[in-house]
Length: 244
Image (cartoon, rainbow, N blue to C red; front, side):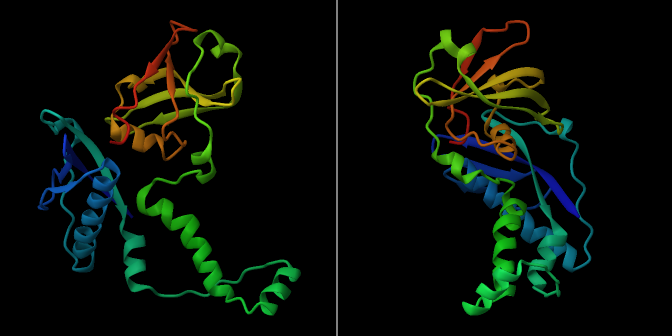
């Protein structure tokens, strides 16, 4: 059971302040955007788990269209999985039968491997990281070479590495782009975001990039935006409003 509430985040020179629209929780502060989102998730987890364990009805979430953000504020949606939280607190164990190659079984026994612990650790690494923060990363991509200087006259001839549709269907981040990953002759990586509909990448804020990171790794990779009515005309997107 996944439950979520809208939070209002205020950006200041010192950092970020966040509060929930519909929950009686104190405003929290963190220096970075990633940390304020994590803090809000933790606070939301605690209060909803308390409601759940005590049989208290969850407060109704406001309609997003009725939330009014002030100056230097924006609205983002924070959600948690109550079922997962409750099971992790109870920490019960279930028996699972798995099939592995015989040679791995021999090696495991020879090296006194705790198969149950190894499976638990592997599942935690691959599942809980995604469940907890929605920020599953392709770790190796964080080591890629980023394009320092893009030659706009050669964009069309640069090597295409991948293409995929990036789409959000939840207000206020409804948007759709075709994301083309390219590599320059010098080996630098950059993206072309071909706008399809909704909120253009040129208007994105930290919350939008956070959602995008659930599907593709962005980090500090340069982004060029291309409009359908202006093919070949590329607009560089500043990095100012990604995460900090």
